[in-house]
Length: 286
Image 1 (cartoon, rainbow, N blue to C red):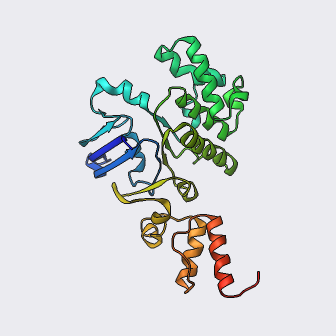
Image 2 (image 1 turned 90 degrees about the vertical axis):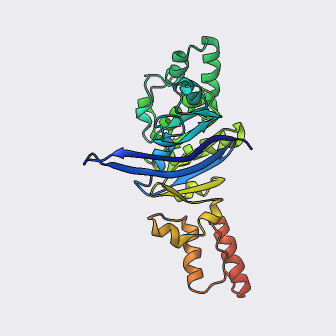
Image 3 (image 1 turned 60 degrees about the vertical axis):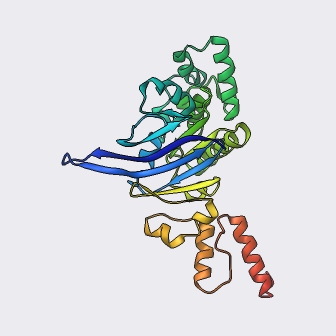
């Protein structure tokens, strides 16, 4: 697979209250391959959201370089192409919804891009169908639930036909039902449409659904692997203020107490299967 995003030795700092630089990213390097579904984890202030904003030129590195589809994000002449290829979805959908009718909101960016009306109609319909919101196309966004609003915001990005979508904690403000709706949508976009997804999240169960998990701590990458291997580092994750999926936590506690269980369990189904085998081996009826 080719890289769609390549960050090479990037560093970034914000100006602190005392006018001193507050380093957020430290010589960080990461590659995102086309078609990947990547979760980025980190406690508040770890640098994960700052990193995400480098992926479509919202922020530029102070040192190092970021390439998107081979284009240097620091080159202003590439800005349009970069943002065409990498779309951003933020935590609060209300900050991205600008129109009073759902379909008009999804069409807004396309109209500004000068896309012909017939193509706008086609793209808007396709985008709304892809996130399961076509039947709400004539509704007012303020009448929608939080999960529905977030799906409309995602549709607005999809209509631009990016190769990659970066989502910065898109479910943080949603209830459990809304979270499930948005995660189902994201997984379908990745699986059915081949869109590369970078998901910034603090929900471990969401990260467990991804192909790859990257843990950022103090502006550097601490872990980068498949979910089962990342979450097997329970003590290391806890030491940097992160949790693990509940199934992983249960297995971890049982292993500490001497039970022979695998250390790569991350789902409820996997946990049930492992416990069933343990009980069968102990000849316990359940």
